[in-house]
Amino acid sequence: MKFKLPFDIQESDLQLDAHSKIVLIGSCFADNISRKMEGLELRTLCNPFGTVYHPLPIATQLRASIHEDQIVKVLFSRDIYFDWFSASTIAALSEEALVNLITEKRELTRGVLSDADVLIISLGTAWGYTLQDGMDVVANCHKQPGTEFKKQLSEINELYDVWRTLIEDLIAFNPKLKIVFTVSPVRHVRDGLIENNRSKARLVEFVHLICEQSAAIYFPAYEILIDELRDYRFYDQDLVHPNNLAVDYIFKAFIDFAYSEKGKLELAEIQSYISLREHRTIHNFSKEEEKRQIKLMSLREKIQVKYPWME
Image (cartoon, rainbow, N blue to C red; front, side):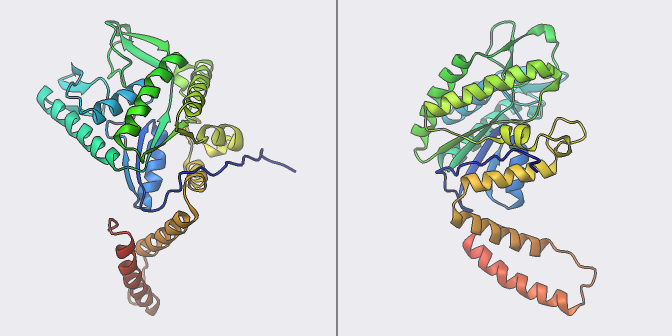
């Protein structure tokens, strides 16, 4: 008896290992996967401009970073300065401080991207908000009145044109960079379920189009949760976000998808070391604990030689 549809994901040609440098940007799903990578102390940078869901402001962030753009679109509200192309968590008490903050984050992103092995882009929605004066799609409305914005579903061709040029720029900037797109399985229920499905369908079609016409790769996180797992026991209490069990499952699928056999063995070695290091005992005086400490010291020396960035 079958309880789920089999979903075999072909391995990619990414061939990552524990030394690979990874940049993740986009929706909260990128944050979830990044936390799994950080748990293994991999070399990652995730969402320096905060969590952003729409493809166009994500593209704006990346373009401004690699081209060293100095312009910041500032909003002053509630005694705080915000950037229209960053999340609300990115804020300052003066315009100068905000500009400096955004500039620093662009420099950080540019520096990491210049030597990164893979860029993972997690898209959340195709519904975009533009200010009535015609500015580009913003990353966040920053609690401004809805009457100040025009909400519309972005066209596939518009997304494609922007990202086709950006991917060319990214590869020219870092020729070794691999680009992975994924569509977040998190439903945007505030838009409505029908509207969410229209949005996700548009993102899926756009991502497949851009991957067919460029060197980008698609990782099916959306299909894993929506089609393979498709049970509310894999969701958090809000019935929208994947729970830890689902994130673990998808992360394992990504490891199988993206990492070489050598890389998988390295990750297993790191996980074994971290588990030993983080183990806590109530009997510090025991012979067993003494043996564990000796083993840990020996393993730590090997780990620090092989993976010097780890603590």
